[in-house]
Length: 211
Ligand code: PRP
Image 1 (cartoon, rainbow, N blue to C red):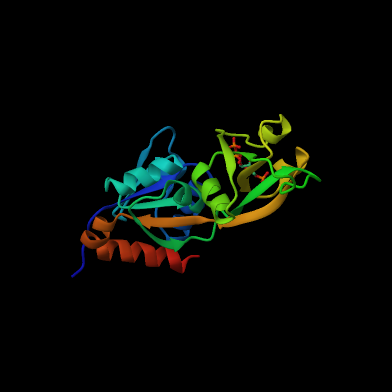
Image 2: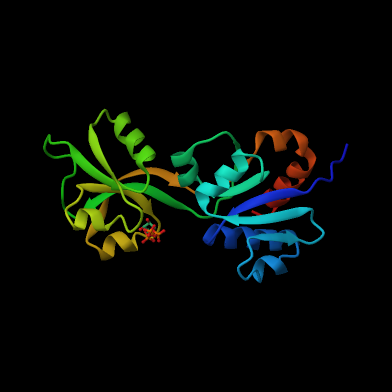
């Protein structure tokens, strides 16, 4: 039986939002509200049964986990760091970048036996990465421009997102090792997946067809 329920979808504000709005436009949805949103945070796609909510990445997960949004578009970086109870159903293929261990150019990170300090916005990912190497490290949580930490002598290295590599290069840093690939993912609340199965499947198949 066809369900015709409204789907509320949370988009990560910024670049993933723009890429997703472009994808919606390719599907043929009326994205005029999304393109002229001003400061509004809740928007309609007229005639589609879709309501769009704009949120910060970690909050996309929180809203989907709590079921106030059915679907979310969020980076794999936030998913891996935050975790949570939701289905990660597919890779949108945009928002591509990588997690890397990086530090001052020309230094051998693994040299010496003193405990190394790593600065990062992603302590959970960092902990898991070094646990897998059975390596003891100290983690310093930084909120942004993490590249500063090794430059100022606060840390031996960073675990951070590298997209073009320009930030590292312009600050005399380099990648020591890649950690994992990142891209935008579609996540779904497990209860919504049952109650709004047809509507969600239709939306997902339209999105997949335009990738
Ligand atoms: C991200 C990331 C790097 C930079 C990498 O930071 O944390 O700093 O982008 O991009 P690149 O390899 O293309 O230079 P963002 O711009 O999100 O700002 P933030 O560091 O303040 O979080």
